[in-house]
Image (cartoon, rainbow, N blue to C red; front, side, top):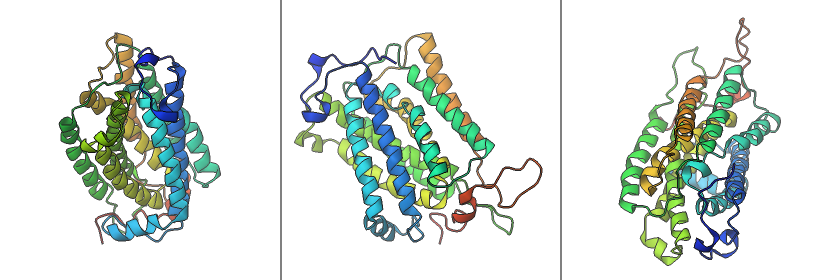
Length: 340
């Protein structure tokens, strides 16, 4: 893919070592891919750390913060994640959100094998179908960035807040109530669909703040003046909420379900809402526009395919899917955020 909208080299400011790079067409896409790979590596570390933590609840905020901030493994994952943020800011100075964010399909090729081989998770046929739909959706979204788009040159901070506040409220509501489990002796563990969607929207809002910082960086305003804008605060505060929610979700459910859902929710949110905030036009030509719409439709279809409840362990009925490892070990059905 060769984006035609990369900023010319003479228009780019001096952004020290990371962003003072030649405006090669493939370089911004490579930075976005590396950022996503860093994010997924961090999520695997978070999952490993979550398995060693005491039960986490969204209503015990102090306990949640103390537990994760005193975990060396989690802090190591956070360092990798911050490296991904730096790479993403560098990529977003030269790519519109519609192109930079969907460069995710290749990173699924890393995450899924890690989940299976390192974490011992098992994937059902529905899981594999949904993951394939996510990969196809992200591919269509990436190739849709070829017609008439431009990287955002300005953003309205008040518009960002107008979008961020209800988005965060809706995500928290989904997180707290959307995955309430069935009750009774036949209740099954939750797969984490609502967790993934809610955390994905939160990460999407945070990345809108990252995009704002990238816009400031592209205009030479990334300095003390940035503190007078809502961009760094949206990025940090919402990211902290998202990380807490993600850690709860990873402790309760499979990373091979939660993170892909988070990714598709975050990227769909960004390519839909981001252009409204930062003035990035959707593709003008019919074919790229069809790819963009088709990618979003497939993203919704992928969410519909994912199972809401984990298969029962030991279910050997004809046609039944094999039980996933975390369907037995994770306490999804025992402690839901917002419940005692």
